[in-house]
Image 1 (cartoon, rainbow, N blue to C red):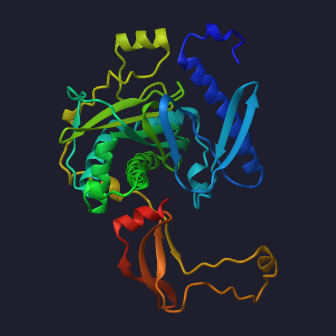
Image 2: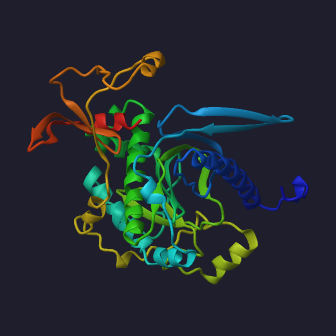
Amino acid sequence: MLGMEVDDIQSNEEIKDVIGELANIVAGNLKTEFLDSGLACVISTPSITSGGDFKIDPAGIAPPQKFTFHHNEHLVVIELCVKEEIGAKEDIMSDLSSDVIMERIAGVDIKASIINSVIDVFYTMLDMEVEAIQEVPEGFIEELRTVGSVTFAGEVDGLFNIQVNDDFARQMTAAMLGMEPEEIENEEEVYDVIREISNIIGGNLKSNFVDAGLSCVLSTPSITNGRDFRVSPTNVIKTSRFLFSHKGSVIIVEAGVKMDQLPGEKKTEDETETEKTTGSETDASSPIETDIAQVEADPFKNLGLVMDIPLQVTVELGHTKRRINDVLRLGPGSVVEMEQMEGEPVDILINETLIAKGFVVVEKEKYGIRISEIVSRRERLKSIR
């Protein structure tokens, strides 16, 4: 790509940029196909996962399609998952100039939003009191760990991820499901909890951008698990690191948006010189100070940050399976029989996650649902796979 010999490559940043560019081109071509079919679609800035010991577990939004290519003895593997996002079209329409977009992004206090949101979400969902810290505690080791990642696309282009060691991830899962850590049956339960946490915190940050008058969509969370890896965007996005602690366990959050630097962040002369020399993003061993004293840690103070996240509520009356031949015969007046029996409760879904069951009622010529059962946290997590 750069017209040079392999031995002349000076840094991993050059490799990341090329892989990101190839991913951007291939995904951009697919985006064009979707647009030509009348669909709205945006792609985020590529993120790169690199290392020697990790696995990526995408959300089960659809069976992945896998394509394998080879050049000489080298393999190139492409995996694709596609899901329709109901109501997303309004969120990605843009008519703002770049200057206006940058000005509005700069008006969002990303740092305070993340710190407050992490504290609130851990308290309200997991009954865990966490505090923001300025540096990793002495003796902390990044062991087998799990990272939940979401990306922003639209007028805001960026990345958010949350990372915890696997032993603490199991504690989080147990707290969410109301059970003991040793009762966790498999890693998918852990991955589902990390997905939900990253989706809520990322969704809260998205809401702040939307409140600032920016259109923005959030990707489905992906999971990376292993010992030796790093998830990072290409160098057009500089991430800042935020650290939190709960009884000795460390929570590492990284976030960044596509602009010169995050609002409120100032690079030191040493950081600027390092970037000029290596072209690398913020080093994991030198976390950015979080100005914790400016953030109120009252767990109830910022509860509204989570409560304002918009949700899509859907009621599923029933479902059935039919052969293609039967579907082709459908016409006006046809009756499609559902597997759901008359009088059985219907499913109530929020953001396509089953959260309750209820019965259809009719009042003043309008349909409604009377809730009869709230689904347990365990069942809710199973339904998002």
